[in-house]
View 1 (cartoon, helix red, strand yellow):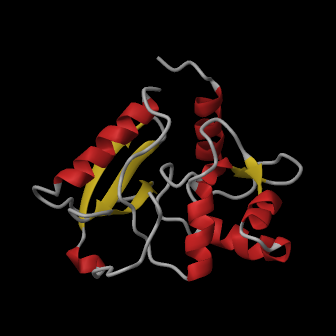
View 2 (cartoon, helix red, strand yellow; view 1 turned 45 degrees about the horizontal axis):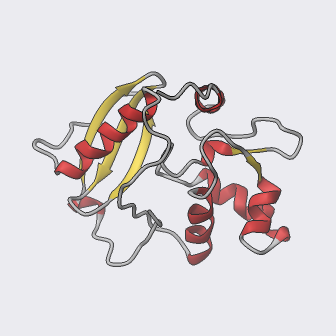
Amino acid sequence: MQPSTAGAPSIRDEQLIYMDSPVGRIAIRGTADYISAVLFIDGAATEPTPEAAPLLHACAQQLLEYFEKKRTQFDLPLQQQGTAFQQQVWQQLTTIPYGQTITYLALAKRVGNVKSIRAVGTTNGRNSISIIVPCHRVIGSDGSLTGYAGGLWRKQWLLDHENDHLLF
């Protein structure tokens, strides 16, 4: 599940589908080989790709299972473009267990440079594979919910959802 940029085709080659969720409409973008984005849609959406690749539908199914509390881990090939540092941060995000949080400082330590805390925060905010690469599990050192591209209300909802621990 490691984010990668190797051999990334252009965005023109990617397909797009949408799904509804308890936190609003979600756009899923990718190819037959990988998922490149899971984004919250608040405004008008572009047209979905007719007959999108099965992998995009598998992603939607896994997200549905997550929202139904039937899934705590994702098993999808992921690929988002970024620097080696960004890839390292995104990879570390995937190691944060379901229902747990860490601080930006702890994440900076995980990537081996405490002084990179601001860069870690910026990279966390540039994650384009929401929920699956769980940037919502990173919080401020004082326990506050700092920044979330999908909106702080979604971050709170996702953390509450995961902390309910009523898995069936």
